[in-house]
Amino acid sequence: MTHDIHLAFAHPEERSQAGGGPLRDRISVRDLVLTVDIGAFQTERGSPQRIRFNVVVEVQPHDAAETDDVDKILSYDRVTEAIEAELSEERLNLLETLAERVADRILIDPLAARVFVRIEKLDRGPGTLGVEIVRDRPADTAVRTLADTPHPIVVFLPNHVLTSDDVKHWIESAEHNERPIIFAVAMGQTPAPTARHGMPQRRIDLLAIEQNAWVLGSLDDRCVVVGTRTELDWGMRNDQIMVWAPSKMVLDAVDFPDIAVTDHVRLTEWFATEVDAAEVVFVDETPSGALAIARGAKGQEGKL
Image (cartoon, rainbow, N blue to C red; front, side, top):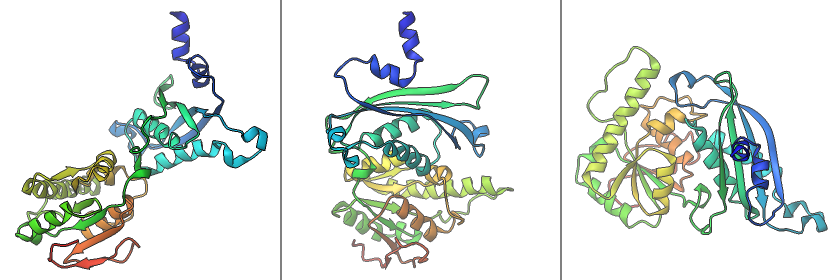
């Protein structure tokens, strides 16, 4: 029992050595400390804290040592890049989510067989708070991560289209399109409440957009309202027609541009860039041209 407790809190490399199974070479990045805005509590938002990363990766057999060929190894940079990429993707509440995503990103590499990830908060109390996970390479790697996700078409539908029969044509067109379709909408026609401060008003405006998203979602069972990257990823890989609810992605964005969320054109362009869209269609609207992803506008023919 004592040995089990020791292993539970041991360094991931020690856990790896005691894990059983085939003996594999390992690479590790240890005691990497970064300052990160993360946490589920309101007091943690906007207050970056130190996070320590320890990652051990068991690798598949290779002959890099014999050939001295750097292209045949799983580089340490692949580990640090996985951490940096996930931290820049969006603000997260849970260390568990961050650890899972870092592990998934590392396991994309064909040389990665198993990964141990430990992440710890250093500034949340007198002790160290953390999470540790171990993940094996999936047997089925055909459907895995955002790296394998098809590029969608983002379609902005204005309010007058949502209240007309034309919306049915757009949904039918989305059903038969080769690419995944994500609909975006603006605030509804009913004015949103007014707050005294900027951040509460931003949340209110985002909720007003989400209310309109649910209006569109209620028009056809094929339209599913989604608000997280995980939902978007799954939907794009499974031919789901989606309606974007923007609150979580906007509030969690690491580098959200200096735009008002009520600027539905700029907001849609930003979202299209975030999901790496192949095209963005503005129905009866004009793109701002601020982002390269803005392709152009189309009328109410209801075709994509």
